[in-house]
Length: 294
Image (cartoon, rainbow, N blue to C red; front, top):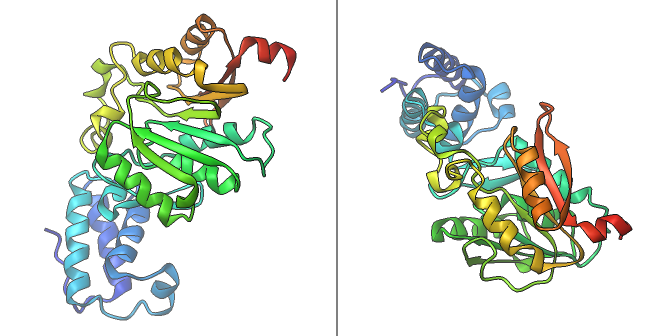
């Protein structure tokens, strides 16, 4: 346990936290220390700047020491504080959900870039909703849209529902247990999904922060990483409204495989790259619809 005494000033505690995490090999020691100090002490960056000389107190010292020990042991900051930011919104986490990642914001951008009217009464479905971050983000951008989030995990559904309440869209969001789209009846204007897409044999070799703390159910995509896409593509086309789109996140090397799978189901595709320049999202629509431009 990293010792922090109650009389330690806030600013000194942050400096000690940086040193402790750096000594444990944490590359983002300064950033992580700042987040953990603010969370443990219940203060803001402004508080630290203006009242940094104030002592952390007994409860703050205990919480901070615990947080630092967990981080030094490899637990991600998001798991320690139990929440993370996505699309400028805050999402609570649980053991049943992934930590929302910046790459997934590319999926939200792709959906918003489909050309649908911002004030339209769009019907959305989010397959494997997890924390609900994709669905909730879209509902905040489309104020008349309604959405349904599905997940196989009851714990994830509870978390997603709480996040819809937290971000003010619960009156337009519903959540239900389901295996992808097997139990759905459409039509939907937009179906989104960030399914597990990592090949089974690769999962055990992932970085420990992912392998040991993210739910395997949300990572393991089967022998070639494409199992979930096959299931989704077998179920979703019948659920799309005329001109409806299926938008999915993919692994950086899966673009061609998704194009082939989509073509086999009569879907035309368009890809979107993430900030690193990797193909990250594939949007699909009926080939006949794409050909007519409707």
